[in-house]
Image 1 (tube, rainbow, N blue to C red):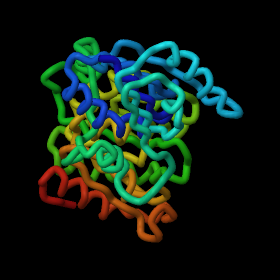
Image 2 (cartoon, one colour):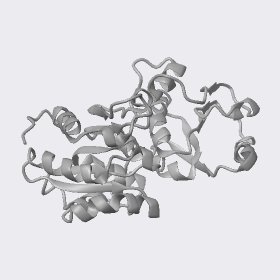
Image 3 (cartoon, rainbow, N blue to C red):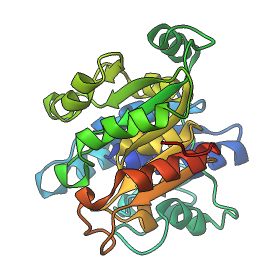
Length: 305
C-alpha cells in the first residue's frame, strides 16, 4: 500500500499533523509513505518509521510549487492521498481514495480538526520521531545519560517579535522556577538563522551557565534533547509544538496568537495567556507570577518565592 501525505511548510503545523500520520501508520502497518512538506519542516519527518520518500518544496510565486509537486507525484497510482494543506492537488492524482482537509484558519484545536476529518476519536496527539543517533547527540550535549542536572528548557524565540515574551522575564522566571527545582540548569532552544540567534541572545547572556542549543540542532536532535528536559517553557512556536510532541511537560505562552487553536498538544501541557482579546493581547501583559504558577502546577510542585 502506498500513501501520499501532503503537509505543512511550517514546523508547528507539520508537527501537529504527525498525530494523524502516526495513526495511519499504525492502521496500515504494511504501507509505505511519501511525505511532501516545506523545506523548514523536513526534519519533522526524516525519522518517520514508514517513510519511503520525502519530497521537500519551497513556496513559489503563483503557487508554482503545487504544479511541481503534482509533476513528482502524478506518475504513481496511490492507494490513499491525504492533503492536510487543503490544496486540492489530490483531485488531479490517480488514487483509490483521497482525503482533502479544508485549509485556512477556523475555531477549535487544529490537531482535533485533523482527527475529525478522519473520524479518529479520541484525536491522536502529535508525536516526534527520533533515532539512536539523535539520542546519542542529546546525551552528549546535555551532559550524559542519566542527566547530571534537571534541565529547565526555555524557548525565547518565535517567528515574529509580536509572539515573544520579553527576554528579561524568561530570565526572571528561570531563577524563580529553579528555586523550586534543586540543582536545576537552564537549556536555551532556538532555531537556525540570525533572527533566532538575536532573539535568544539576551537570555543566553543573562544565564551564562545555560546549555546553548540555539541554531545547532536538527529537528530530531532537538526532539531528543527536549525529552531530556524536566519542563519546556516557550513562546508559541514550532519548538513549543515539538516539545509537547516529544512528551516533555510543555508550557506555551500566548498573546498574539490563539491558544484555542494552537495550544501545545501532548500528555502534559499547559498555557499561560496574556490578558486581553485572544490573539491580540500584548505579550508584555503576561506577568511572571502567572507563568510561574502555571509551570509549578504543571510540574505539581509548590510555588515558593
